[in-house]
Length: 334
Image 1 (cartoon, helix red, strand yellow):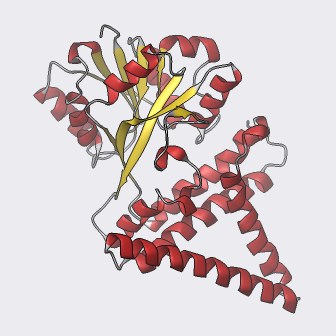
Image 2 (cartoon, helix red, strand yellow; image 1 turned 60 degrees about the vertical axis):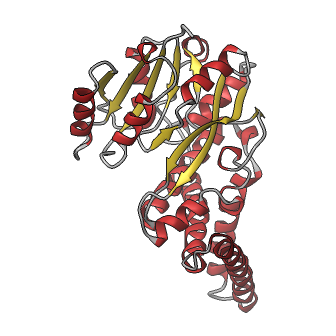
């Protein structure tokens, strides 16, 4: 292995997990002399930079560089890191992730074997805190009812996919299709992978490439995350409507249906009955899923917390999408 690798990490206020990421990078099986880490930090206000500095002091042989991301957005942070990175291969990671020890080696191997222009793996989702709600959110983040057919969260076979988490690619790919789109404050990775596929490239998912991902720990944090996903997904779809998948269409349709029936229900008894019936069926499905998950994992707290987590994901994503559709009819910002 002689290819140099730059690991690029957008970061903002990640003191709780940044050290876990750096320690897992230090433990990589890939030769450390061929690795560098570029952390694009949005001027964190917590102890993130102190944690990074402590790691640098303890491991002076590991090349870790921090650059300022004044824009404080993920795509801008990625592009800032790419500009200063020197590796033949660029591997994106997040500050709340932990790659397995063979992560870099497997990414490089897949690229060397020509599997895809961008390669990635699967997430092992863990709770972002040690409480019942955080545990339920982690379960929801890997359940088909919560994430549909997002294969990198499930148990897939190796093969071409629409998108992968994080991703590893050769520097030449940036020269071919361009950097991450800084107009999209979320869904920038999906848009990037869409351009790869439109240019004739393959986005390859290998389940042997594994990383730990720490999910949100509160319903409020989960709601903000999925609202952002839905809001920016619509803006991305304005340019690439053919990329719409069924799992992405259902939440806004569900949210729109609830809103319409609630409004019509002010005057119409049939609308009120339809709304009650729809919500009852939805809650029954959520409860059944929660009971099965609770029995499987021996965690009775999932009976209450899992329906709340999944419903938060659906409604925040759906209403975020609808708000994006309605709030800027001209859509001149994308």
